[in-house]
Image (spheres, rainbow, N blue to C red):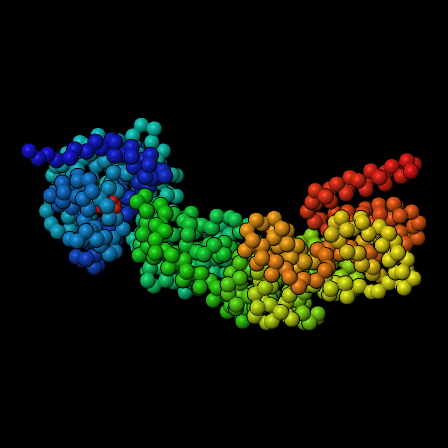
Length: 583
Ligand SMILES: Nc1ncnc2c1ncn2[C@@H]1O[C@H](COP(=O)(O)OP(=O)(O)OP(=O)(O)O)[C@@H](O)[C@H]1O
């Protein structure tokens, strides 16, 4: 014996309201959608038919359309059967030009209404029909006496506690939001509230003002965008000032001119976090709630294509209005830097316009290169800040490559233009920029250095004597990155128990010079260092050298290792002890 499923309408309404839709307000969208679809269907029969949707609010909400209407049989078949729709073809595919497709939209009326009445007359002929339904799933159908115009009127009576959803001050903004671009004029309580066309279709439209209206900011630029495969057109609005790259990048998306949402994500590549789009598409897929988009292949293709279009615009802007391109880069440098990591044209733009922190202050790399011949950089912010004043005083130009993406960009520049154009500064270059000391001071210091050698040996550090500004700085710590790497490898080789691996590491470190991982550069101009040269107590020499070393580590803001902390404690307490007359 066969049976037919029965449906508990209340259960389904509960499912929709609590698990599918984010808010009952979607009922407005579904009613508008049905009205516009009905007009589209009537146009197929009569292209010159009237196209209007009229809403009145109050204790009940009434929405009337001049659409195709329904016959009595269609009322049973389409309105009263869950999942039945006139908007799919015989094969079950969504019909082009129609917004609805699932046959459940009407149900959303019960999110706010206790009863729904439909009065309709079909454009295909027949008398007017009245359908009255309540939220428990009962409905009646009756003929309407008298003259009923072709089209449909839906009347909602609010359920208890939902009266506000039918009031004009709630419905008005919702109609404007969802239906602004719909191709039929929507009138609410006597006034047309929708614009009826996409602003970007009108060449003379003031898109800046439109952006201000719907997005709440005046854009730096409004870029027309289009992806044919997705039937997508729209505008990309560039934010006027910097936003945090982690800010959620959301867009206003319409699907067949009905709003999907103003918080839709995933339309642009991550680097374009400073752009907000308003688009209308016909072939991207909404999720079941119609409040966001499926992250499918089509959306990925759209994202890539829109990214290309924004990037091309930027390159064009640089060619036509270079100053504006500079302003834009300054405002949104992180996104553009991130793009430049894999895009050479963008890299050139960055090179030309983006100020980097340098010993000459903030200047673009190209300008820096023109002055210094090469871009010598330091890939660590703290190390740069320690060395910059010294380098600047000796006329050596350095670039801080310690911020996000900088190192990658400079490496890429080095790979494109050659290492002589952009490379990490070598310790020897830094030392070469510092003047040689007076021979007699140097000789005296050398003596002290040999007396106190143990202090620096403990830290695997060499001492060098130079003469440099600023005078107030007694010593400078230079890290030999390559040597540091070799030492790490050697240590791993010592610790490894795998002979094959140890041999391989041994080969890697073979032939390395004996120089150490760090160099302490003593400044002969500094009065403390000059007094060190005259010390006669070897224990005090050792203590002073270790103290200078720890001070230089702190100055460089290099991470403290356990033996550095131990040295800091030891030298501090010993100096204190001497200061209070212990020795
Ligand atoms: N205003 C109207 N004029 C004419 N027919 C209508 C109207 N409203 C609803 N219908 C008919 O009722 C059917 C069911 O409507 P419903 O809103 O439940 O689903 P849908 O619009 O087909 O799809 P979706 O669930 O995606 O909204 C529609 O397919 C349409 O044939």
